[in-house]
Image (cartoon, rainbow, N blue to C red; front, side):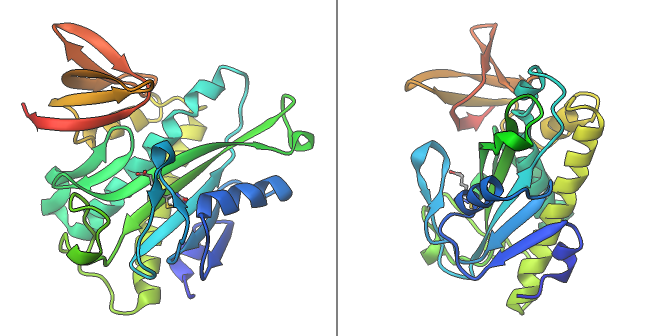
Length: 277
Ligand code: BTN
């Protein structure tokens, strides 16, 4: 596979004709050898993709991209660990901006991140993100252990309505993107657009010593989040639920709901958009 634009954006780009789960394969590689920060493992034929909350993630061969990126930010102390929670949102933001650029400016108002990191176009899911924390070889560690994050993104390129896993999904082609005829060029365009934005935001975030506020990451996520100002149902860990109006994303990346006039912060879970406010 020829991916020249993408290869110029990563120190190590690993292409697989087929992979089980790109996240799992990258995690295993990273544990076995010292991979550089921003190593990318990618395929258009992932056969055992992992989704959030133990779900699976699948698409017919050559209709989507499964992209996993190893991030190894410098951690100064234990308090930096909590800031890693911004990385999945950063992945969602990078893909949302990439999709907006591929679909054109008129798509911007309907394309964005559904908190925490799905990417939607007109309420239909075009990309899912699964981030996994990885403990690398302790010998390579800074304070006893070495932590890294693998950000996995699955983006639908040319799936037809019949090929969608669920009717609430979509693909770039269905959403109206003009994609190159050649498979190599198509994959390279979508992958490089994502890696460019991921690298941009990751660079700003790490330069700001993992401050989402100073780097502008929080503002950008808020600007590109289609969940804000909406009535949502949050499905919380332990299968409890909370319904409220989503008002902002706080400095820790939590979605803040307004429930009976009181703020209620959601740190983890899935949300369902109920209706426009
Ligand atoms: C979701 O449930 O919405 C998240 C789906 C994440 C899928 C991507 S595809 C690349 C990476 N490898 C995996 O096994 N999963 C993620």
